[in-house]
Length: 222
Image (cartoon, rainbow, N blue to C red; front, side, top):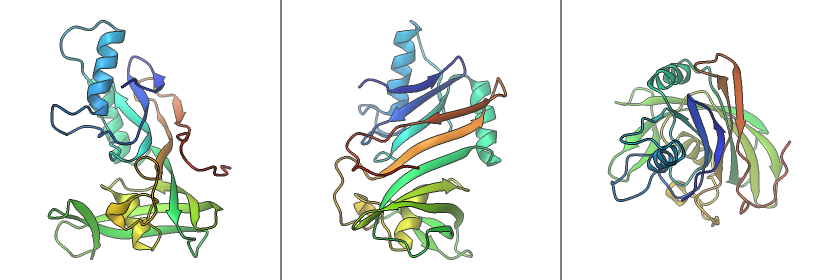
């Protein structure tokens, strides 16, 4: 597969991830965004041997959009710290089933892994291994049976947006794992739309936006 590069310099590689491919961490015989990106760097810059790339923030396989990759260990270390200190702005677009009762809200839940079913679920704050999850959403537009939300994360938990929106009765379109009953052309209707941060080396502001895939239904963006 070809790589859709949104931004590139000596320290960073930001790509537009398609649906259906894992960021990393699958069997060696299956492509990942990390392996494709390494081959892109190896070929473009004629680099022999092992290419260093560091993934600092993953996207689930069915999710599309901005994926940030470090090209140096220094950039990876500083980006990891930026994510830990929550100084990175991450904005997602989600097409959900139904119409939320509130046009904007903050959601707070505690999440826990369900190893048996390979998913996450909400739990109590006192449960073993419970992780606090916080997001903010705003309804951008409403269609007959769906709503387009802008979602910003305060925490970065596994499957967080998918679980929390499903918990309030508005599963992401196409996300059958978390209760959606509507089909979606590819993956699920969750898109990493924008990321804004301080460049880890140059210390200048950096904003990268990924356009919605062409197969998304026509939605009105602000």
